[in-house]
Image (cartoon, rainbow, N blue to C red; front, side, top):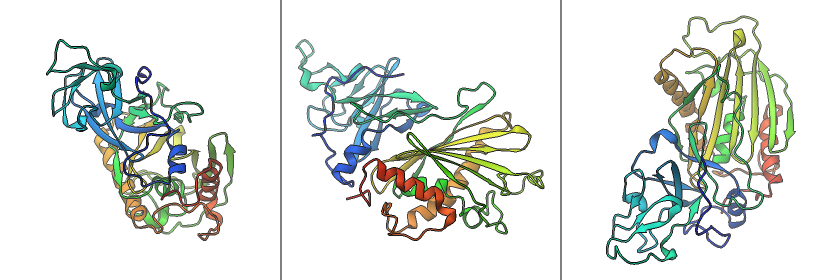
Length: 351
């Protein structure tokens, strides 16, 4: 579902009041699509979210979802403080009401007067995909497309929308951690990894039009620790990473008996120092198990990662390869940083 075009389109001259990104980097990143909410969490009441330092309001206008600057154009009160009815949202200060396409449809103080277009909201496109609501702050021209997710529309697969996770760290650091295969034996020993199996077999990366992909084969399993049948002697686990710059990656894990689990790591940059990580999944096995078990295990895995991402220094992601040390196991990290540089982003990504 996509909203109609904005009545007051955003321009390169309108930037967030508080910037944690370099301005040139912000203008590049703003051309990309990011998730800002789960579809299921949007009811009649508006949601306040932040993307790339820009406060946004998300609300329902009938069958459409509207995403706009979280600011009433009358006296500057956040519309996320207001009330919705599934068709419109009303400002908490003076009750101005806004509907589809962000148009102001009612001014209670003057119900019979015409409404000037200056009262319409600046809106952004809204697309529902993978159970998430996506938007782009600069959709004009060469905007980067929403990344694909393998098997999501395959009827043999169960679709799962895990709750999002907030991380006090930079999106680039979080994505780099997701694609890192050398940390399993040290970080994920309470969830799925084997501390006695730290060796990273050789693997290669392949450049794609919007990033790169890597197929990593090893004996490290992906069953939760304690699962009775988690051992499969001699089984070669394949993890197929597909990275879509700047901050989305999918991991397709090949299980025994032709099982497949796909995890999308969609890191939405709230700011250069805060990330909201969305993780839709789909799988073709264990479809009858409680979803809460999936939510709990996923949270435990990403909480293990979160502690490390939040502790990393520098907090941003150095794109100059000489600024941090690298080993052969870091092929994906090196490819990721190279792909970000190709986008034209700065060496450190932040102001």
